[in-house]
Image (cartoon, rainbow, N blue to C red; front, side, top):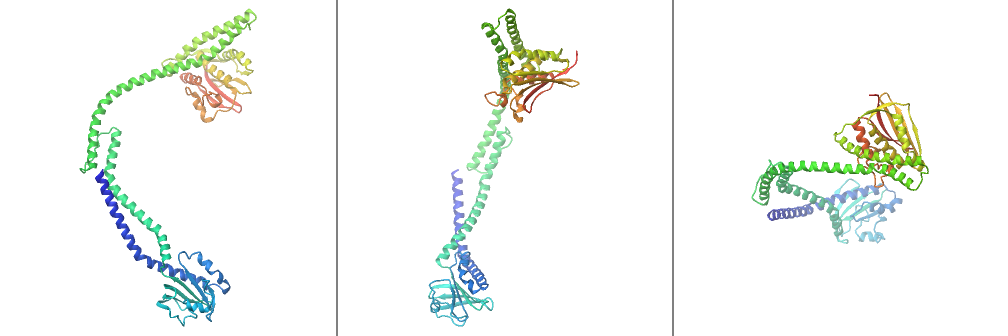
Length: 493
């Protein structure tokens, strides 16, 4: 790339030199006429301003001029019709005699001092004229406006032409303009160079993009023998090599991808099953431990109570076996490998029995647990799956109930379905989080606090069962808590 950089540096250097020469020439030719036009315009504006003033207003003249006399050191002298000085902008002019010494006319326009050599006069009208003069006292060439005022006075406005300080100020004024001109010139030059030098790079970039998309039909045009041409040729060689290699790899990659997908599916299913089993066995194990501790502590004082405790432990043991089987079924349900076993049963008594199973636990935790049934109704559903769904709802309600400690099971019905709701008092879950509750392993944070949306795997199991059965389910915020609901179909076999 060295030859390209050398060419670029040389062309930029030549262009910069040409721009500097052009700027200096234009500056020399245009500065003086521009300055002269500006000076004449300012002097005329100042004359018009003074012409509107009364004598009592003369003291404020120079303060007004300072607002727009940037870079123009204007001398102002006002004389009455007798030639007496009425106003001066230079405090060292203190007498009429000094006026004559410094080149100010004592009267207008009858006499001129000998040191005031007029070069040129330009009459504006009967009252105002421009004078270009050489002033030997000031040792400077001046532009003067001499005019009559409406109140009978005479005014003389004088400015030096192109003194050193004016050149500096003017140069500072024009520097930003020149900088902008050079900036645009540089941008134009950069644009031209970029088109010239980047066009083959853009073409190679397009070819490289096509190569990244595995399209090997496009090639780079080789337009020169320099570094750009060599790079284009190497890209074409690389394209052909990749085309041959990718063709071979695609066949092997497809085979490997199928194997990987199958392995990932097996691993995910195994992980899902393990997590589900761990989650669902917690409750029966807790109940069994509780009743076993009661037996060990001689809480059961009579034989009937001992039998009851043992029956609960046996029942929960059997339930664990059923849960393991059911979780395997749930996993297969998701993949459509298992069909549910619907049966006819009476739903009210079923829910009442479910509620009684949790009665001891809610009493221990001082929870108000109510049930609002409908009249006895026959439904058709897989009873074990309904038990799993409602158990998940009740377990979550007990776990996440707030200080009001209120849980209720409510039932409503339509012509086709029975709706079962499990309500508990708690803080609201954000509405945008509600649809995510049914996702496997979803939780807002590590606390798994239901108020924050963490409900583990139980609700994903509910989702799998209800969707496999084609029945509705959902969750909604209430005024003082949250309600999870499910539907079962009414009817008889």
